[in-house]
Image (cartoon, rainbow, N blue to C red):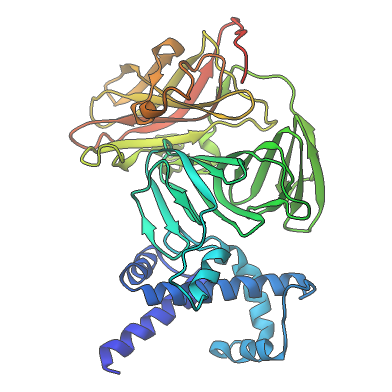
Amino acid sequence: MNENSHRKDSDWDDLVDRHLFGELSESEMERLAEFLDSDPSLRKDFIQRASWETELAEVLRTGGNDESRTFDASIAGQLETRQGRSIHFLRAMLAIAAVAILMLSALLFTSQTKLKVANSKDTSVEPDPVAKITGLTGSMIWTGDRGDILREISVGSELTGGTIEGLSPDSWFELRFNDGSEVTISGASMLTFSDDGQKRLRLREGRMSADVSPQPDGKPMVIQTRTATLTVLGTSFDVEADLPATSVSVREGTVRVARTSDGKEIDVPANHRVIAAADQELERRQITGVVHQWKSRIDQGPDETFGKWLAATDTDPPLLRAVAYNPKQAPHVVLYLLGLGVRNDDATPVQLNADSHFEIHGKTEVETDIYFGIEVAYGKGDYAGKFRAKCIVERDASGNFVASADLPDFELDPSVAAFKDKLAPSPEGLFVNGVWSFTHSETPSGLRISAVELTAGIHETNQSQR
């Protein structure tokens, strides 16, 4: 082995080990991604090592009581000698690092199904597809079950399992399993799935809606997030996952939710919601009524945002800054884009009516048009489309602006025009899940927002809900 090869192997080992312990900087993560892109054998090695660490973390967490796992003397011996760490030190470190191990990016995270395929002796046999893409817009990255990383995926593609990541607020992905079960992710989300007779999904972050067909006896659909495990026999529900908590809202049927921190379980029936988080009670709350008003909470931090969050200064409140974005449909175009999730603490749905009015407060560095978009759903949670409007903008000499748009100003977003026959013709009467804003200028606009507010008159809509 020459000196360059030895150095490469040493760099690879160091990067992987430190990634699994959550110690990599942003530039080192990029270096690790370059290794994975350049060499299929390194991708396979990473899959094996990442999965081994994940399984180990679970054994240490459960004490090895799961009959499906073995934790014998040979593995214990490996733990004692691996990089000189003691088993006691690994117990402490893995308790801290388990979340980091499971929070692998789209370039780095793979499912258990992928590991089985990577380890298969007969790699020439393609596994059978388990699902088909039935809807897709916006920028996505697909990591297939054999480690392929693809940006060009399309409606009608049949998939064997893997990871899909929505990269922007306008991303939308609809997947139909062979039994008719459907799941949808929207916005900046990441979902991993497999089906070897039992459907297993992991929602790393973002929002997912599901309509699940009755599942086989003893093989419920299992959905994991960082803070909860959901067991589903057949029902309709929504899940929102971020680092500290998982929110589950059930529309039909019942979902069992187990909190990761202590294993406590609760059954959530229709029209109820639960939040699984280590710092609050695990309790059902009934979802009653709707609201027609909403206000963003940018001051509470970057959770459920897309863009660069900026802390308050002596002169400015907390701001969300737009970042450069190339739409998949027009990769030569540069937009400056930001986005926000729409959610109330009590899970009350936010409904749009004929008098709905959006107002956006912020700043720009250049005078340019400002556009505002909304993602909406039907009453049962099914995806209903995306709409956008060109705002009326009032500015002052310092670059501060107030932009506004009334509901009649919104039109179907061009990115979902191909699906207009299956989407709503208007956002009136629907429920808003997310909002975004963007500019399209020759130079960076410096778009920053401090608040978004939805207000409405007393008009009530009688539009039927799907």
